[in-house]
Image 1 (cartoon, helix red, strand yellow):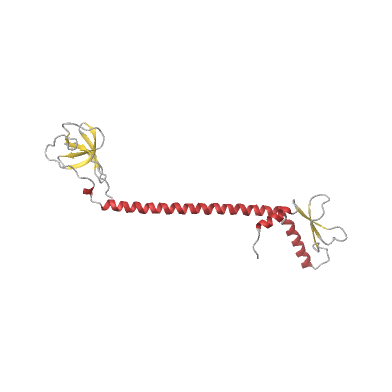
Image 2 (spheres, rainbow, N blue to C red):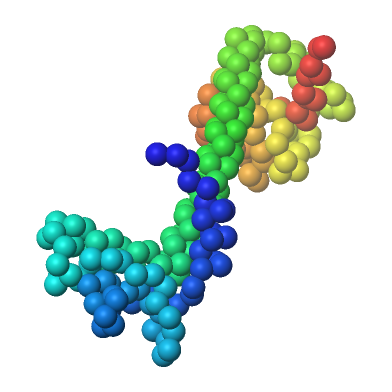
Length: 214
């Protein structure tokens, strides 16, 4: 079957007789055995005549039935029906085009997210492989360290505001990050996520984060 030219078919349907096409048997002497296809308008001439479609046309039964089927098909495939089918086809084509574009956009988004995920996994692996001692160096604590801007400050001398600070517990010999809850108590956090409350002997501001070496 040759390729259908849908645009040419639409142009032909738009130029053809509009309205509903109907069937009727001829009554005149010259078309008594025929089936007429016409538009339901008074005084309108038949659109076409299918010879031998009448059951009493006198033609061979197989030929008569085939001609009758041809007449019924032509009447059903009228221009209005053809145009409706072409409109439906165009809507389907537009829907398919939209879905193809949506699928392409989704594929691009998935590819971008996959790339970002792999980059994040690589960065996490690099951070986990980095020794903790390289993050920053803590000042050594020896005895009763005087209160200085960059050194340990005795809790008995001065307590910090409630922002996060680095605290030192002399009884456990541990350093941790915490904030002042009041009455000399600190809420502290270990790097592994464990938290608790302690009563440290000294505190100091958190050091600046290390600068990445390029």
